Image 1 (cartoon, one colour):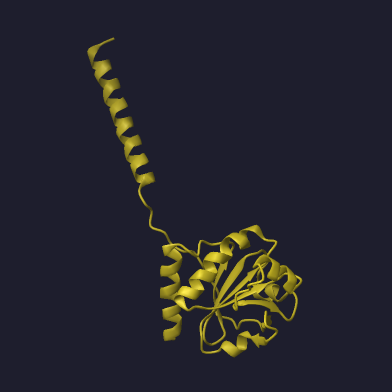
Image 2 (cartoon, rainbow, N blue to C red; image 1 turned 90 degrees about the vertical axis):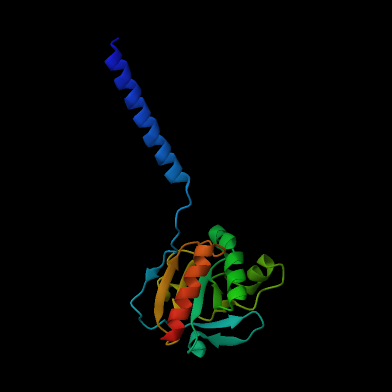
Length: 180
């Protein structure tokens, strides 16, 4: 083999190793995270009347003037069970107005899931299928309703509500909606 050919091969292998090293370094570097949400057309939120675990009734309309997160979930939904603790913690920490609407058939299922200690933000709809009026076709599905009762954002599917991206996104978004 000629000396020029050996040098050429060594140079090509070196360039390939350099490119591979840069690729692996960039791939392992922390990537900026964006908390994705679907922007909705600001239509009025559907009527949502619900029951709390204590038997009291309320509605989304009673929350006018406040930004409200409406979360549809079920005890039989594995992604819901994984996501819900983080969402409940976030709502508690950020004093976020949350209505976590279970589509389960009875309070018994919900009480069993929470070991009898159901958080006050958990509710059951007074009308079955109301989640479909919001546009939810799978669980979990979460909506942000502005102070005027308009649907602004949808978070389809399970999310990591414990993440810094979620916290940052919600802080900015809720603050912006409260200004308007």
